[in-house]
Length: 341
Image 1 (tube, helix red, strand yellow):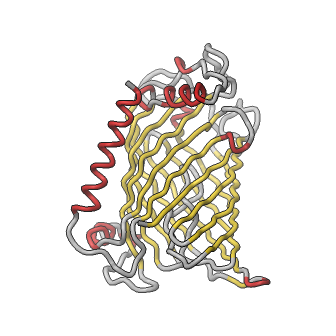
Image 2 (cartoon, rainbow, N blue to C red):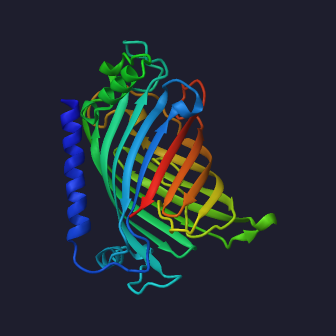
Image 3 (tube, one colour):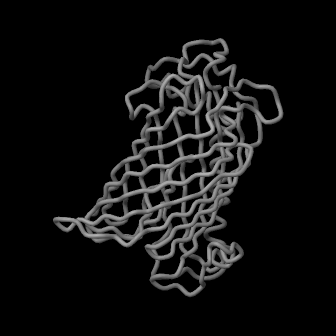
C-alpha cells in the first residue's frame, strides 16, 4: 500500500508539473538557461551519527525558464520588482515546483515507549509551488507555498523502516508514538543580496551574500537572517545550491559553463522560532511535545562542483539545540545533484 500510494502521489504531481510547464502560452526568454531540476538527500549518516532528530530529508525540485506568465505573476508581488524586458541586471522570474519529505525521530529509536524528554517521531510529505527571481548577480528572491501532511499519511515510518531493513540497520520501534495526521500549510520567503565580488590570489574570487527571510504557517513560523561567503575561480549568478528548509537560502539556479568550475562556501543563520510543529506537537489534537528553544542557529559549509550543465554540491550542517532537554547539537549532511534541460 505504501509503494502504490507514494508512487501515485508522485505521478499526479509529475503530471501536473508537465501540464503546467508544457501547456502554458507564450515563449521563454531564449538567452536564459533551460529548466533546472535538482534532487537532494539530507541525512545524519553523513556526520557518522545514528538516527536522531532531523534524520532524513528528500527533495525533488524544478525551476522553469523565465516565462512571461511567471513574470506577470511575480509583478503582483511588489518586492520582486520584476521587469518583463530582460537584460543583464534586470530580474528574471521563474516558477518552482517541488516534492519533499522530511523525517524526525528521537535519539533512542530502539524504545517502543513514549520518551517524554525527547522530540516526537514525525514526518512531513509536501508539495511546493513558488516564484523565484534573481536580479543579475545582485539579488535573489524566493517565495514558496507548501502544502502536505504531517503524521502517518506522510509515510515517514514506512520509508525509514524499509530503508533500515534494506541496509540491515537497527529497526526504529517507536513510530506508534508519532504525531497524528494534520494538514500542513506553510509560506516561505527569503531574499539574498550580493556585494561585489573581490579578487584573491591565484585567480580566486570571493563574495559576501547577506540574507533574511521567514516562514508562516502551522508547520514552521520563524524569522531568519544570516550571511554566506563563497570562494572560487569564477563566481557568477549562483546564490548557492538548493537546501531543505529550515536552512540558509539556496536558489537552485546556475548557468551552463564551458568546462569545469567550483566554489567553496560557508554561512551562518539565526532563527527566531515561534512555532515548530515537530517540537510543539499537533496544532488541534493532543500529542507528544517538548519545550523548544526560541533561538536556533545553523553553521553550514560545503563545496559545489559544476561541469557544463551539471552541478553537484555537498553541504555540512551544524545546528544548535532546538529544544531544552536535547543532549547535544545536531550535525548532518546534504547532497544535491542539479541538471539543466
